[in-house]
Length: 247
Image (tube, rainbow, N blue to C red; front, side, top):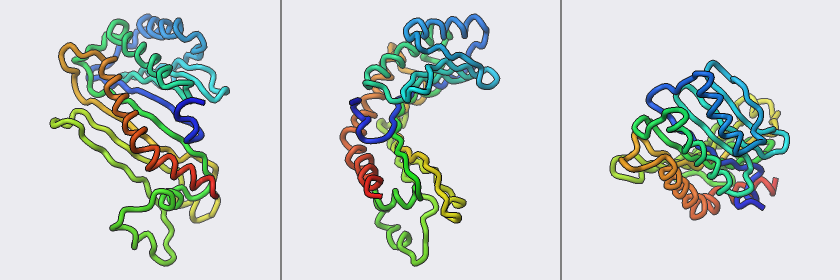
């Protein structure tokens, strides 16, 4: 079983490279870029224009695990849902970042931000916010508020962002996103939807001299994995999985 699959229903590893300047949208440039990716991953055969100047190449989604890549006017994104290994997903992301300077004319100087994101989805039919409060607890200063007679928790999405250097250029973030809203709580009709735990690391600004996109990717990925392995599994993923299993 993949490393993180046992902790959730679905997990994914994505990257975003945001640029200061707009990318080329010339037909030949875009097609050559995606054809080079498809040469490495032949199953990525679904190509389409999602919005104006947003282009997508992806595998079939019906298998429950697939690769995808998009280009937008000022962003390149790559992701893999339920990868067999983390390294397999990172190999895809490294290919995209290796191709970007040569095929899309993206310079390390042009980097606005580079993100690595690990996402973990839990399927649950019910009040996501109340479940989170039960599984994770609430901060000590808010406990009495959460226990108000007749009160029901409408929104609870804990989030924490940390800087990892003095200039705040490298940051990491752990957050939880719920899909329950006031309508669901008022009517008592809860669709089965996902509670998502996100672990991300981001480098802001142009890359330092002699630093490549792939080297920055590896640095940010290590930050994410350290967070997940040393903190997030014990503090978030396992408590959520246990609480859902008891419902």
